[in-house]
Length: 346
Image (cartoon, rainbow, N blue to C red; front, side):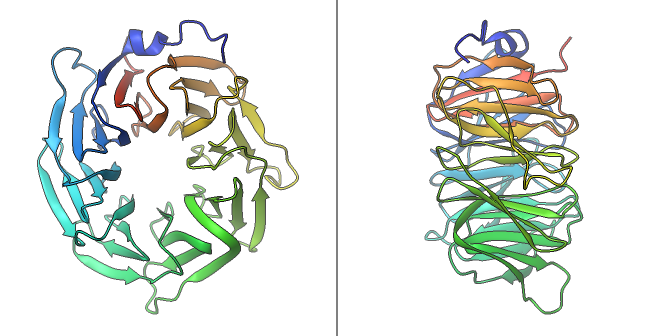
């Protein structure tokens, strides 16, 4: 990656950036897709649009403590969870509303939402299911340990929670709340479900991935990472799983019988700098990756062609997201830099 020329090309030509002054914990786009929201460790949320190249971005005082995560909500706006125990909804106009308050000693650590209105909120050992209006549907758990990640399948019928010694798969509509437990010894955190709902993969404490094929309970072991994998992303059709944790973007093939027995594809690597975040394009087999030195790159999987997005030097990439249309990209760093790229700009 050291020979990447003009690494700020897309940021300079099609983007805008700001120093926000605190760790960017997460970033997300609302349904309208042009405005990005950056969630910070100081509890604030900053709203930005690609057209806003002048003046200050809008700052919202949201959580009394760090924002831990943020996602697009089921209908419009965003959901954010904090270490103040609150789940907040941020409307497109910047209005902040408390959806649930779990108490000061409870961290709202992981979130997932589905277009049907279903929301899954991980707090401690439990996952709370809410409807689109914030009404509580049921509580799943307690799980064997603090939930390390939560996901909803594409149909909105199953909720997956990672934890110590495996993953619990819950059917939302089941009358009896008893999960199918996918077992594998160890601590599981980051979690991803393939678009067809047939594969579940987790990042583990011991620098490896583990997966399960749900149709026949086949285990999938993916190891060899020099660091922990904190970020996982399936391509739109589920052919590839992109992962962080190495000095390249590691892509596992989920076709042709893979990933077992198949070697992963590695792209955009070479400088011994760990990839910290990955995000696959919502439509095409393209992945964006952020690295520990602040470099952001975009790569086409089929050809391996790499396009620089932002140069190193602004802190490790801690947040990365596409909008739903794949026309806008946002990233944030541990040192507080936030960037927003308009790829639709002519």
